[in-house]
Image (cartoon, rainbow, N blue to C red; front, side, top):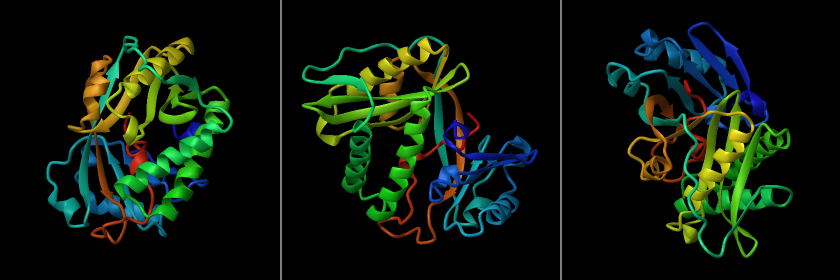
Length: 268
């Protein structure tokens, strides 16, 4: 999926190095993935590998194929282990009704600028990332996604109210697997079933492209998981990420953008 949007993947046998030159502050686009389950406990080695691959990075992002036997070796490097659930379905996810007053269409033209704005407004609401750095990241990521969509390898859909984007998500075709991306609803339009409806719209588009499996990755125990399960996605496996966002970990506002794109560097 990352390769489709311009990332470079180097296979080193027991691990991959992923680089995204056009978005150098994309943490999970500039990361490593440990592909050998027997090597997930060697925190010291993988921190060294990451540092050698990305000497100027202010973060550490290491994907693991399973949970290590202990957290202490990772904590010694100030790395938190984050667990994500991989939800999948081999049958077409359900199509739920669209709430009254909204229109749905695939993003085109000026819609992409609205997608950036929606992303920035949500970051401002949560205060998760320093605004200037986040905008640079968000624009580069949106440009990459638009490029993949323009080649019809992915599609991004939005629910609009009076012409303004209220909710959006994307889906990427990776051979016959469809991977959902960036499910986001404006806080003023939540609890109206917009995300559920868009999940079904995107699923149907992917099915028409020949996909027969649907995948989404979400934070373990996230409230959003209920939405995904309600349309038919079920727990398949888990991803583990050893992660340190920035050197100033205890800062209330982090300075390099990543949160909205978590889990892109994963075994799935």
